[in-house]
Image (tube, rainbow, N blue to C red; front, side):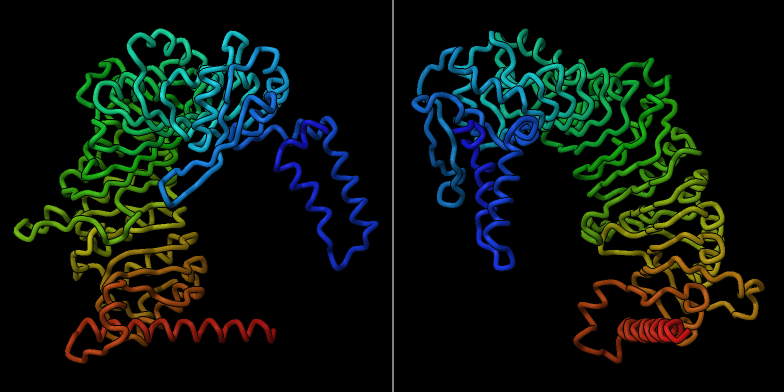
Length: 540
C-alpha cells in the first residue's frame, strides 16, 4: 500500500468519489477515482503533504508497533480528542520514512491534541539527526510546551512565519541552548507570540526571542518593554506592530530605553501600529510615540477600554500631530469601538469638561490631509460647532469613514452651535464619505434658499448616518434636507437606548420619545423616496 494511503485525509478524498451520485453513471465515478489516484504520485503527493494540522500523520509512518492512538479529554466531560503516543525508543533508521515525508511539510500546526506525540518526539527523536521538519516555512505552535527546548526539532532558518505560545519558563541551565535556538529565527518575517509568563522572566524571554529578528515584517505580541519596542521599531523591514497590554503581565515601561532612540526616527518601512489596551492606557501609547522623532505611519489603531480624561486625550492628539508624518497617515482609530457605549462613565462629581473633547483639541488632528478612516471616542463625547465641522470637512476631503462618539453610555448633549448646517459642509467637501457618526442636534435647519450651490452639493456616497440622540423639530424639513444632501441615504440611526426604551411603548410626555418617533418618520420618508427613485430608474 502506498504510504500516502495511511493518511486519513487522503483516504477521504479517494472514497468521496465512490459515493453514489444520482446524476452520474458508474463509469464516470470510476474515471474520477482514477483521476484522483493519479494525483497521489509525485508531485501530487508533495502538494498534499505541504500542509499538516498536527503531528499524527508523520508519526504514523513510524513502525506500527512503536505508537498507539489514545483518546484524551481536553476538558473532563466536555471535549475529547485523539492523540498519538510513542511507545518505545525508535532507532535512527526507523525514523527515516517519517523524515522523508516530513521534508515535504511547509506548513505545520501543533495544537494541544499533539501533547503526547510532542512528548514522544522530545524523548525519542535523535536531535543529532537534524531538524524533523527541515523545510518548514510556517509553524503554528498553539499547544504550548513543557520546555522551550521542545521546539528544537521544528525551528530552522527556513522558517518565515511563526505563531508561538510559551507557557513555561526555561530552566537556568538551558539558557545557552535557548539563545542558540532563538538565533534560528533570523529569517523570520511574521511573528505572533504569546508568552504566559510574568514579571522579569516575561521580559527576559521576549528579549531573547526578538533579539535575532533582522528581517521581521509583522509582530503581534503582548506589551513590549521599552528597549525591546525601540529595537523592533528600528528593524529596517518592519511594517506592522500589534499587541495587547495586559496589566497583570507588567508593562515594562519602567525599564529605561535608549536616549539615542528617542532622538532618531523609527524605520521608514513601519506603516501600522495596532494596540488594544486593557484599562486607561492612552498615556502608554503617547509614551511609545515619544520613542521616535518621526513615524511614517499609514495606520494607527489604538483601543483603550478605561476612563480617559480630556487632558490625556489632548496630549495624545498633540503627540500624534507632532511625531507622525502628516502626508502618510490614512487611518486613525483612537478609542473604544469593540463594545460601543460599554466604557466606564465619568464620575458624577467630576466636571463634565474634564472628559469631553473640545473642538480645539480635535483641531490638532486637522494637519493630516490624507485621512480616509477616522474613528475617535472619548469618555463623554465631543463638544463641536459648525465652524469646527467645516474645518474638518474641508481638510479631510478623502475621508470614507468618520466616527466621533462616546465610549461610555453617557454622551454630552450636542451644543447649540452644532446644527444641520454642519451636514451641508460635509456634503460639500467629503464626496467619498460612506459612514458618518456624529452626535448633533437637528432643531436648527439651514434655509435651503441660502445654500448657493445646492444643485451641485449632493453627495451620493453616504449610506450610513448615525446621530446618537439628536433633538429634532420638524421631521419633514429634516428629511427634505437629507434627501438633497445625501440622495442615497435610506435611514438615520439613533441610539440603541432610545430603541430599547421607546420602541414598544410610546410616552407622549417624554420629549426624547417624541424625538425618537420623529426620526422614525424621517427614515420612512428617506426609504420611500429611495424606492420611488428605483422605480423611475427601472422605467427609464
